[in-house]
Length: 248
Length: 270
Image (cartoon, rainbow over the protein chains, first blue to last red):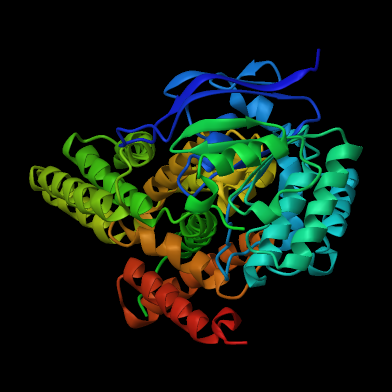
């Protein structure tokens, strides 16, 4: 039986001040080394699902288990093993942070309190920058980079964390087609080499890596299709979801 | 220039330097994490607390510390949970704490107390005692120590709280620690520049340093240098021109900030 990494049972998440849940009746299991892609139109609950998995959002019903731990209790310990690339991250142009430090920050949770980054951590950060092709920007202020370059910094930061579970929220949205392909290849290679479990959210069907094992389709906060890629896409097309909001 | 005993001058200069360093270090957090409204409220809470201390004939520093700490403990969770905009927080808390402060001062009897009350409002560096100096020194040491020990956590928090949390850092703990440090720093700096002006001493040096530097570690070194220099310059200007010391310090630090904005390479195009 495959080892379970993520399990969501009857999960519902409602934002503070809202009456309607952003996601509802979510039952999902993601196994070790699985590459799962979550697609759906804008506002279908994809980002909420990711942030519920890593505990940034608290569930209003149900439970989220990651690596055997309940994310409602002490999520900080589990998050050290979860790399997270947020959607559309943009730093202020004058922010006092250079790229190398931002990538190195990915190591901080793992290092724990009172421990400083050592030479090994710097090496890991530099390797992550090299992998995504931003090693030439290491000493530049992050706010001075373009949106696409900043997105690469975020991916490098998540890689530097050496996670066991990688959560990617529209990781290629600011990249050009060429960079998108290269980044997708890099992530798939990492996924296979390091035995990662990857959950990637996208509304862009062209961004779905061929390597993905399974696709779930979300609509109005619910998972409506869950299966191997060909089946899931066909089913979503039959349900007329793809033409409503997804971009090809 | 007014002739003053050398010991008073040395005490005042040391207090200026220490308050300049402490306020401007804390200022980096305030500016970078956009905590101005919360910090501003705490400076006025400390003022109200000090006024209460005068009314109760206790050490104003203790009540100022208590007020600032309580406000820090209330405001942090309140601003997070209630999702109030900074304008709402500042509007309500500023008027509430100032109102309380003036009510306490109004009921404070005696001429000496009135003078002390004015000292809280505008600052009175010459009333700084050796004991105050030791406390300020300890606070400076404590803040520098915390910065060295938890620099990476503070750095991650200042970059992006959500990302810091996502990478496994207990951000709430460090966020509340920062709020607490702002409160304590404000309370300890009241004697120097007063409750009405202390916040400028926190914001101006850090904002000036941030006009030139892209590396947080360097900002943490340059900001206290600017803070201490502007405090010293303000102190000597006040002696020369016979201005109130707190106001002189704030004018010098505000002027420094304006010059920094004009010269800032971050504002040049291209």
